[in-house]
Length: 171
Image (cartoon, rainbow, N blue to C red):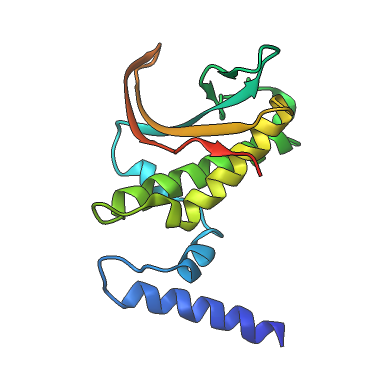
C-alpha cells in the first residue's frame, strides 16, 4: 500500500515538471517542496536572506525593554568530526532552507499581500518563538526581520530589510 503512495507522490512531481505554469500556489505544494532544498541560491550571486529577531521583557520598573536584534542562524565553526556527526549544523541548514523558502514566497507574493497568511511565515514565526523562548524565557513579546545581506569575503557590505513582522505577544 505504501508503494502506491510513493509512486503517486513521484507522479505528482513529474506532472508539475511537465505542466508549465509560472507559479503553483497553495499549502499542499509547499508541503511537497519541503522535502527538497531550495536551490535558488545558485541562480545568482548577491543578496542572501538572513533572519534576525528580538524579544521584549518587562523590567523591574514595569517597563517593556527590547533586546538587541540577534542573528538566528550564525555560521558555526568547521570541525573535522562534523563530517561524521553534525546534528546542530544539519538542523541549522534545515532552518536556513526554511528562511530561503520564506524569502522566495515573499518575492512571489502579490503586492499588498499579508505575509502572515503564508505557510512559510507561520513556520518562521514558530521557529523564532522557539529560539527566543530558550534565550529569553520570560519574554512577553517578539519580533523578527528578514534581512537581505550582501557579503564580501571579509564583511557584510550592504543590508536591506525585506520584511519586519509586527510585534507579537507571546501565547
